[in-house]
Image (tube, rainbow, N blue to C red; front, side):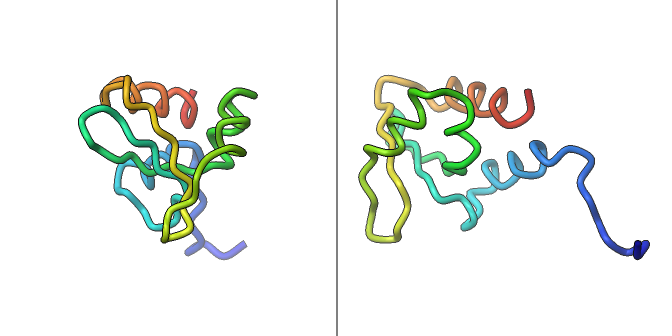
Length: 89
């Protein structure tokens, strides 16, 4: 194996970094009560629970092709805590 190839020690941390940086690789938007949008990966959050998977199946798709979930009763800090747990355990 080439020595210049980078493999993250923990893929969850790498993917959560994409969430924190609003990466264009994130295909889902979670809208929370402060009119904020949190970007994440549908494949990752759908593995966390059957309810999230069902919500993703029913989610609307915006003009950019991203699924949109509305959690307007949740604050962004709480949602980031939940996503941190989903991504990194």
